[in-house]
Length: 173
Image (cartoon, rainbow, N blue to C red; front, top):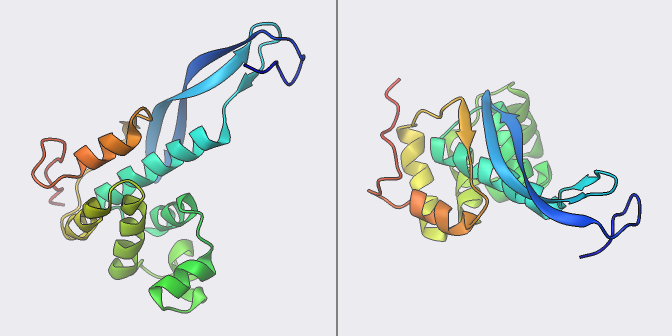
């Protein structure tokens, strides 16, 4: 293991930290791998681990069928898509993406389905079809959600299988 970037000492140890992010009125928490210098206390979380956390949150939003400006923008950003690139994929003017993300217009359900499918496809291509069903019958998403980064790909695939016990009943309201 490399030395500490701050103090240059070889006292860096692996640790796991709970990290949280607030998205669409929901608090998402995950145990994130990091390193800590025992000499100076410097804590470093790798960018790819934060990106994985972001993608896991995006998967939860897509699975829940949340459709609104903030959710739409979060999903696009989690995929690292520029508004013009998403507009091109959707075959709409770039302004439309801006209107949806600002809340000026309600998010088009077909645009949301495509974006959710792209997020879910990052984990399991067949599961992407589930987002169409959940948009018709959205499910409730708890205010506090814990996501797991270990074996995230396998867990996401299991959670999205049709008829699996991991899937909750859709919300009726």
